[in-house]
Every structure is written in C-alpha cells, then in structure tokens.
Length: 290
Image (cartoon, rainbow, N blue to C red; front, side, top):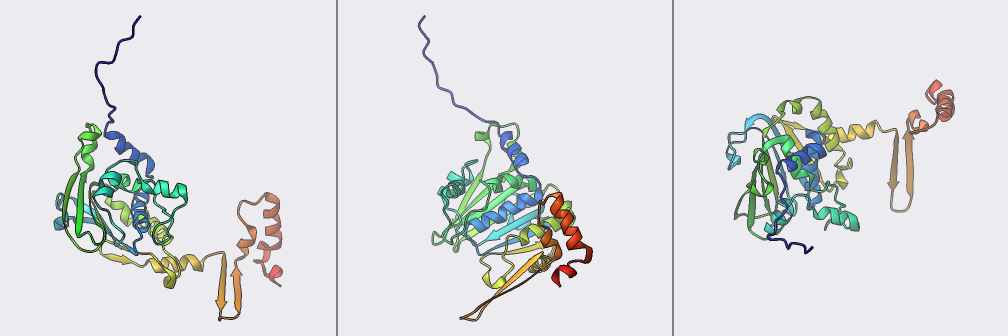
C-alpha cells in the first residue's frame, strides 16, 4: 500500500504561559529574582550596580509605557551593554544565553570574570517582581540606545509568537544598561525578612576588601540607603577563621585567629563531635590553647 505524501508543512508553536511557568519554577523568590539582575551587571563587566526599590511610588516619567504602575525596582549599571543583535538574538530569544557556552568552555569576560548569572533567568525572574518590565541598553561608541518594554500580563491566552515586545531606539552616549520593573507584585516583602536576606546576599557579591573591589553594589529601599560595606565587615568579624598576610617587600608574615567552633569542623561524625565537646567546648578552648 503506497504511503501518502504530506500535503502541507506545519510548525511547532508554544503557549506563552509556558514562559510564565518557567519563571515561577526556576526562580524561588523575589530576592533570587533581583540577585539575578545584579549578577547580569557583574557578568557585563560593570564596575557597579545601583538598585533602587520604591514600594509605593509610581514609576512616573521614567517609564515611557507604564507611568501609573505603582511600586518599582530600578537597576542601573555601566557594563558593556547590548546592541540590536544581542537584544534580538539573546534577550528576546528565550533560553538562549552566551554565558552558558562561556561556562562550558571555561571562558571569561574581557575583565577576566567568570559569568555567575544563571542562563538567562534574569529576564524571566522579573515577572516574579512586577507586572511590567522595561530596559534600556547601549554599547560603547555606538551612540544608540535600545529600549524594550514588556507586559507580563500579555503572556496569558496567547501563543508565544503573538506576545508583543515594544521596541524603540534613540541617540545616546556612554554605555550600560538600565532596567525598570514596575507594578510590584509583593511590595511588602521589601520591608520584611526579604530585605535582610537581600542585604546579606548582595554583600556576598562584593569583596570585603574595598581597595581590591572590582564591583560595587549600591542599594536604596524607600529612600533609605543601606550600607553593604558594614554588612561585609560584619561577616568578616564573625568568621570562625581569620588570617592576615603582611608583606613588607622582603618578608611575608602570616598571622591568624580562630574560634573554638572552627576545630569542630563541618559534617563530622559523632566520635569527632564527642572529642570536640570533651577537649574544646568544656572550657571554650582554654586548656587546648594553653
């Protein structure tokens, strides 16, 4: 029996809600979503990322499309930025990320940084922060800044190819990326426990040694500037082990101190823990030190 030849060619499509579900599944909470945006700044070889969170104020004139959206998060950096090829081929193409290939090959950025962002999760994670996403990006010496506006509410009851992304370009100097997420979904989290979690997580992205710091992070929540340097120093102050290296040009001197709990170690068996309590914990290490 002769087989019938196909009469027409069809193409696969995907429901836009799948993208929405991906963001929900891959991003655990609002703090991780915002951290991914800061990691993108680091991966773009930026020297800083400036974060402003306003839980009540409308985005206003800074938003061309959604000025009435209440509550916003603004992230700005001076990284390498994106041209049209990167915007269209990378940012607007779901799951395509040059960083994945860089990690696989062990490559680094022009400043020698290993990418820490997670496979394009930054753009998907913004839906967890707010309903509207807008960003501006420009590459050095091009004189052109590209704008993209997205309403995450459009990702319902449509095929992905039917979801609009609003694009514009204008003349602009310099380089870097600005990102605005407005219409915050859970503004109350930024004044509660999530704020403390965010501060602690951000402090881990910057070097505690200011003179050697290649990347700065600035944070402001509802008009209050939060000093991440103090958090970084407090992390050092409570470390179980501290070591200092002093070099005068000829001699290297190493000194250090540790808390008794450092001798307990992590993940030890019951016998080691028993010895620790017998020899160290009983007098907080005084006998061992003597």
